[in-house]
Image (cartoon, rainbow, N blue to C red):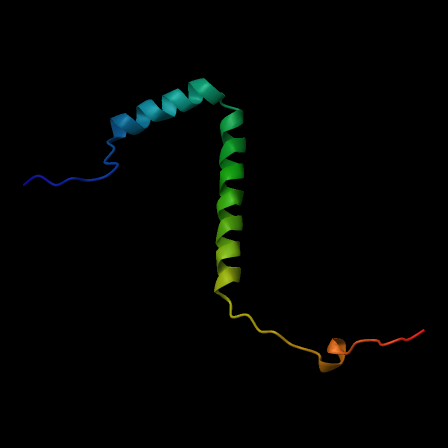
Length: 71
């Protein structure tokens, strides 16, 4: 039976990708990139959680009054 899988990568594919990344960015730059990626994902998750919270508006009836001055 043939099944189509998206992004079905074997360990050989992952090894080739890792070697290419190491050659492109170098050993010192990769941890910095991963740290930035992790913080970006965390910030995205936090913003999604904030959007899911119900919004409650508190209105102050005295703040809607206008100050009428005549000259």
